[in-house]
Length: 403
Image (cartoon, rainbow, N blue to C red):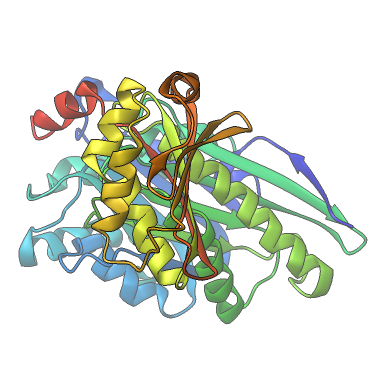
């Protein structure tokens, strides 16, 4: 049986990885906004990207390069998405990668890219290249938290986690870091996530593992129902632990990746722009999994439901409206809506009729973490997502994001 131990370091906790940060002038206050992750030797690489048809320049380049299944470095910048910037954006992105490759004595195709920030603004190339040079000069195994801070935009805190996994087959580590607070909904969300491990993986294993992990973690969160142009999740495996991802070790790796990614995904929701409450929406009894998923997002993304959550208003009619408008099959005679918090749940409505007095539901919606459960009564399909409420602070932040 595998043992899981929390360790420090984030993406540099596994053997074989270094990180560094630099200042590219993209953020106010002179904060680091360029981050570099380097594998000391060729690493197995996999990635999952946004489905937005206006994918940013770094996404287009990384999507092509990661298809080789190998990589040596990742350059990340915050403060500028380099999205909707045309051929100039692609040219600038390639020059950023070329600069890193030259400084690290790597082939350009070994360098992957990710960006986050304002859309539609050309990348200030000379400044970003200075940031790359600084990040390269500061590479170390102690820069995990610095990396996490450098990639933040409207995040209020860094998001990183790492585990050491031990078993009869030996040991290995998994690390991760993410950023994201707004423009969040799969597939994926305006988030960047980077996962590392020092176990040995082949490219096919890495792709399959990452796809499964993303589906159960980052693809189950929403803050505002908006799919960004820059969403990316990367997995790099150095193989330095000397352990093969086979049998029990392979199962332990999957569990470790799920734990790290689940923590990061939850932290993204907890840090959602202006969020005062987290909500877990679960739909059961749907005709199939797809309809359950659609109903889940209809509830979690409904401005009316989100506003009611902010006000602590147990208005189950808003949940019913969202489900009915989702275009899914539902049996009105078997519809159930439950509100809960802290392990306590009460039926707000059964068969379209209020089930308990409003005053019994209000304390449940006053909690920091709320649950909404909907039974559609037509099948066995189920899904759940994590979301947030809608506060005036969210509107304030996004009314002035471009400035």
